Amino acid sequence: MNSIFIVLPILTLLMFDLGLTLRISDFALIVRSPKAMLMGLVGQLVLLPLVAWGVVAAFDVPAMFVVGVMLIACCPGGSSSNVFSMLARGDVALSVSLTAVSSVVTLFTLPLVMQWVTAQVGDAVGIHLPVGNLLMQNLATMFVPIALGIVVRWRWSRAASAIERVLSRFAFPALLLLATIFFVQHQDTIAEHFTTLGACVTALLLVSVIMAGLLSRVAKLDEAQRRTIVIEVGMQNAAQAIAVASSPFVFNDGRIAIPAIIYALMMNVVLLGYVAMIKVRGKFSA
Image 1: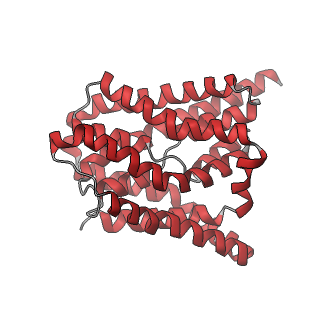
Image 2: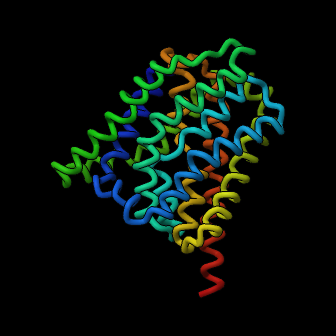
């Protein structure tokens, strides 16, 4: 069975679930708190891809996986970051707003960045990006489900809350299912390149969150906002990256999704460690 028949429905449901948590007013924080929103968006949409490009060069990653690493770096957002921000005593409103805005902006920044990336390294391995197909897939699997979720919450808030409670329970198991499918399908490739790719994506994650923290300090944001931006920069939408990599309408190569799968594992380990560190520090300072 082609894994895309699992990946695309899961991504669509996750984006609908995200929409159920959003309100139109969540997009307005960019006006009410422009500095924090700007720093978060710069971290997600500019800093992370730049760090990713530097990291793949430093680790001399094969061209196919350069595309995969850059792809996961261009897919910020996801409702899990809101949960992590809450656990870290961050600014949950900022987290929700960054998720909302970045999910929409990424519809356009992802094709632009990936078009440049494939122009640089894609010819070496025969990888080409059909930009129109990517835009259409993003609209169908991300924008429409998110918009539908927002409308459902606006019109039927009680029903939306009930649906969201059910769907949210399937978010992590769904990502685990995706990872398992791709590990089984590409186990030989993963085993061959795991050391290099593991080090590469871990370096990407650690450097990005450290620089996001520094960026937030330079901008003189408060501690709750800094914690949120660190989490938002580190937390990527692995399902989106996997869908783009494996879709027959875009790259049609599950191997390109391997960096996203490894990143999904490492980001949960690192960010859970970050949350635990904050909680321990809070106990000692209480």
